[in-house]
Image (tube, rainbow, N blue to C red; front, side, top):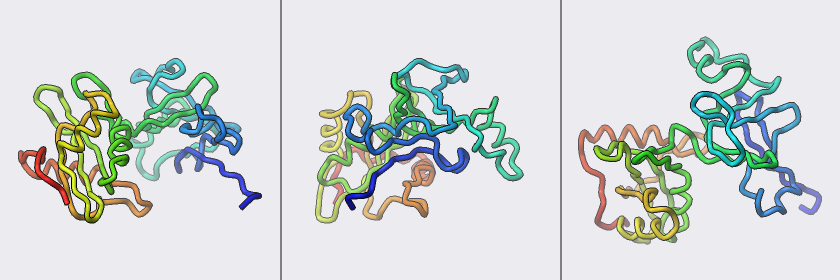
Length: 226
């Protein structure tokens, strides 16, 4: 398709469909290929801390968006509307940062961020490493309660058909690619595909609920998945 150009966008229904765009020519720059682009015309993007104050470039925080295309609110749900629409800005619930040129880098959903021993761990970073392992078909990272650290990294893994891997093997693989505090402390294996939404996103809330419903059972940290 020689006459086509690819453009990557980031946004959500609440922001009118999209808020940033990575243009075709931007894909040639190594520093920006992992970004979600720059704000679209008429859109303002800022990164804020827990006090809703803007942070500096390259500092992680919550992505917030302002434009004339923002929703008016959720139907018959003023509480949810007030939670995300404040002072004309849509608080997306996504974590990310802006570089010096205004390119947006999306890190994770805030609700999927794990706080272990005071350190923030973005689940998507751990998942990306796990997907590099040749035996891993699917992986979902969640935070689970830990008496000492507050939370610890737990993983649910589906292996490729005919492949095998132990929890210790996957933990060591992660240790070779990311900081030690981000390495999973427990891993479960299952044979069935992970639960997903109609558009293919892994339903981590279902996975969390299933984990909690096991009423004190301990995750698998050894053994072999197949």
